[in-house]
Amino acid sequence: MTLGLVNANPVVHAKKERVARTEDLHSNFVRDIRDPEHPYSLEQLSVLSEESITVDDKLGRILITFTPTIQHCSMATVIGLCLRVKLQECFPPHYKVDIKVAPGSHADEEAGEADFDIYFNSSCFNKQLNDKERVAAALENPNLRQLVDECLYSNEL
Image (tube, rainbow, N blue to C red):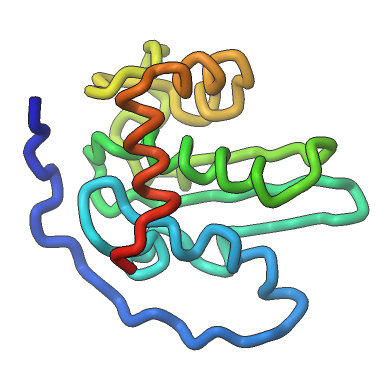
């Protein structure tokens, strides 16, 4: 079954020049993740920015706050899953990762809970994306895992 594009004409921004600075190193891990609906990176769609990523190496904590391109983005949960999987691959397991939707950026941000589902009716993203058991269960879904892998390992960028 094919999902229709929710945001058929996203605003695409130019990629920022890569600067080899230590403080920018952490944002490089996630900036090239491809959007689930478009052949653009999360950075190009302004879903992520350097300011939306906080890493505290001393405390072993990472906080990412992302902004979906539209209020009713049906792929916000997939974006959050992509971020979590990528960070789990790039950082030691003792790091605590928190992924949140920017306040006011999504219509269902604080809606009632639902299971991870390829169609994402409504969900409490912040709670859902930070629940290890729910994330693990979601990634057992072969269709969802394939979509996450395509976003993470796409050569189209």
